[in-house]
Amino acid sequence: MDLSESSTDDGRHGRRIHGVVDEAVVARASLEKSPGLGYLIAEARAPLEAAALFPALPFLLRAPRGDGHHVVAIPPFGAGDAFTTVMRAYLGQLGYKVHPWGRSEILALHRLGTVAEARLREVTAEAGGQVSLIGHSLGGIYAREVAREAPEHVRRVITVGSPFGGDLKSNVVWPMYEAITGTRIKSIPSSFLERMNEPLPVPSTAIYSRSDGVVAWHSCIDEEAPEAENVQVPGSHIGLLHNPAALYVIADRLAQPPGTHRDFEAPMWLKMFAHRGPWRRARAASTPPPVVAR
Image (cartoon, rainbow, N blue to C red; front, side, top):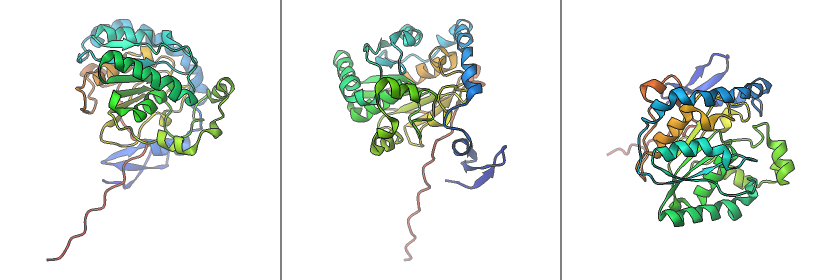
């Protein structure tokens, strides 16, 4: 794999991977731990994204149809199932059996074992097989870590604006998280944080927006792995679950057969808005075996 240096627009240097600059390297070096005030103010555009659903609906309903398997929608920190209503209604229209989170507890990492894993067992018992998990923001971290603990029950994981990579303070809500849950970020074991950064044992898609005003986009993308991918869409953090581009990517990913993964390819109408890449960290180039003289 080619990891030669390449100059970027801002004068810094990024890695070039198969001819594509790994912009996440540049982002980690240049962005603050949170997206910044300008992007946060721009979150007010979320209602406009919701309004775009109506003209986009004919295109959304042309999304690939899967086998109608069971899906669990996990809302973000501090939100309830109402937050995922639009996405659940859309996927239900495509034939999926979409389960709400169905829990009143505020999401917190220390409740992964007592709340999230128990909910997964409930749904898999009803489904009689594997289920897919979709999580927004902290809900995506829940989805990833539950899949890591019980991969035999999980068909696919899709995260939407979820800051699972890097610094857990790369967002604007971490002080609220600490205040409400009583969990200090610095008290989370380093082994758990390191595990969060590792790719999953099941197929996964990380959907993110570079103009996210709540979490830094480079914390929402995965490391390079055979069954992982990162897909960029335009939009606010709050509006991602009613963002037409994000909804189409979700539907397309769910339609893949179990145990398979193919890279996302946007249809013509979406090519201007949805793009794959970059990796948060590329795999190191493998060392070729030595040549033995005969």
